[in-house]
Image 1: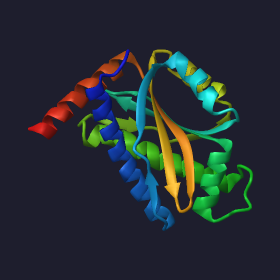
Image 2: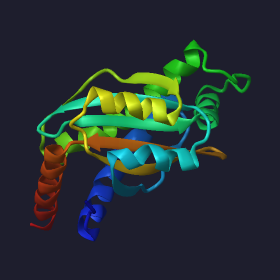
Image 3: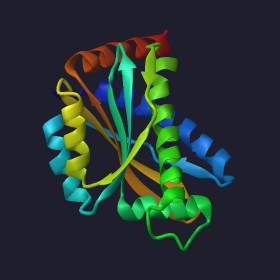
Amino acid sequence: MELTSSQTDALTELINIGYARAAGALSDLTGHRISLEVPNVVIHPIHQISPLLQKVIASEVASVNQLFAGSIAGNAILILDREAALLLNRVLTNRPEVQIFDGAAREVITEVGNIVLNACLGVFGNLLQVQVTFTVPRLQIASVSEVLKLIAIEGCELNYALMIHTRFHMRTNDVSGYLVIILGVKSLDRLLIELKKWEERQLA
C-alpha cells in the first residue's frame, strides 16, 4: 500500500502539529528552545521496517514504546541510536560526563519519548476526533531487530508501519531518530478516513 500525495501531506501536517506541541513541552521542561524538524512520513509493510532501520542504525538503540488503543490502535515507538540518545540526555540534563544509560539517563529518555509519543498520538484524538488511550511508555535498550521482533509478537495483526524521520534541534546540537507508528489494516483504513474528514473540515 502507498499513500497518495494528498494523504502524505495531510499526515505530515498532522504529525507536525504533534511535533510542535512536543517541542513546546520539551522547551518548557528544559528551559532551552528545542524544535523538531518537519517530518518526512512514509508507509511500509511491517516486515520491511527492520531492514530499513538497520541500514541507517548499526548500533543498539534506545526505544520508547507505547501501545495505544481505540478505533485506531497499534504501537508507537521513538527510536534513537545509542549516541543520539546519550547526546540527547547530556544536552537536556547538562551532565556532559554521562556516557552510559544509567538510571537518570533512562528516566530522561523515557520522559522525552513519553512527551513526543503523547503529543503525536494526542492529535489523533484532538484533531481527528478519535478516542485513543495510551499505556505507560516502556524503554528498551536493544538492537533494532530485537525491538521490532517483540512488537511483532505482541500484535500479530499489525501489518503496516508509518516511519517518520525526526530531528531534534537543541542549542548547537541536532539529534536524529525515528518515530514508527505500527498499525493493522483496519486501524490504517480508519486513520485515512478520519484524515480525509479532517481535511474537509479545514476547507469548510
